[in-house]
Length: 349
Image 1 (cartoon, rainbow, N blue to C red):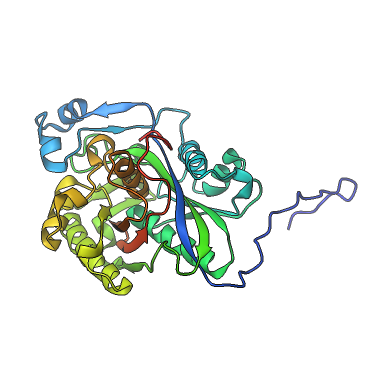
Image 2 (image 1 turned 135 degrees about the horizontal axis):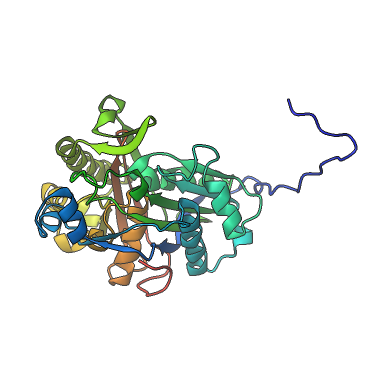
C-alpha cells in the first residue's frame, strides 16, 4: 500500500455522480452521431503489390477500394475523442452533461490503462465513469445493449458510446487475408432517455462461442491479427442472418417491418450473402465498406452516418443493427431512429 506524506495531504477533485434512479419507466434512444477518420488514405494498389495479387483482386473479393491508416501521433484515444465530440455537436449536448462514456475497442492504446478515461478527458467530460468494452466487431451493438439498459434503469441519463479502432498497427502487411481488409476510424453515438413508449433502442439479442476463438486472433506474444477467412466468412453470414431473425422475433416484428439494415461492414460479399439469405431488398442494406474497409467496432456507427448522408436514414425509420466478430461474438438489435435526419453534418465519414 502506498503511504501518503502527512505534510502534503492530497485532496481529490470531486467526482461526478450518477443521477438519481428514475422514478418512471423510460427508454433509450440515439440523439446524435459522429465519426472520425485519419486523413491518410491507403489505396488498393500498394497493398496488392505487397501481397502479390492483381490490382482488382482486393475490390472483387472484399468490395473495398481504400481504407484509412492512422499516422504517428494519432491514436485510438484521439480518434475516439474526435468522433465523440462530433456526436455531441450533432445531438446539441454539451460534454459537461455526459455522465458515462463507453469505448468499444479491441485496439486500446495501452495494455493498461484503458482508453475510455483518456477519451473522456480529451473531450472535456470531467471525471465521469468511463470504461472500455471488448467485444471486437460486435462492440458497438454490445454497447447499445449495455448503454440502453443503464438508461432504462435510471443509472445514467446521457451516455456517449464510441466504437474506435486503430487496426493498422496490428496487421502483417504481407498477409493478403488481413492487410487489404482492416482500416482505422471511429464512430460515436449519444444515447439519451425518453419516456417509456417513445421510440428508441429495443431489446438486443447477443451470443458468443469461445470454442472458435482462433478464427480471428491476435496473441499477446505476437499481437498481429491472424484470421481464418473461410471459417469467419461462413460464421459471419450464419450468425448475422440468424441474429436479424432473432431480433425481429424478440421485438414482435418481421423483416418487412425494417426500413434499413445496418450490418457490420466486414466484407461486401458477406453483406450480399446475408441479404440474399434473408431475401432483403439490396437498397435497404447499407454498404459503406468501399471507402473505409473493416473498422471493427466503429463500422456500425460509421455505416449509420453513411446512410444518413446518402438520404437512407430518416426520422422514424426502424433500423436493424447486426454484428459479428472475434470471440466469437455476435449481436443484433432494432432501434427507431429519432436523431437528426439526412444531413451533411456530424463527422468526417
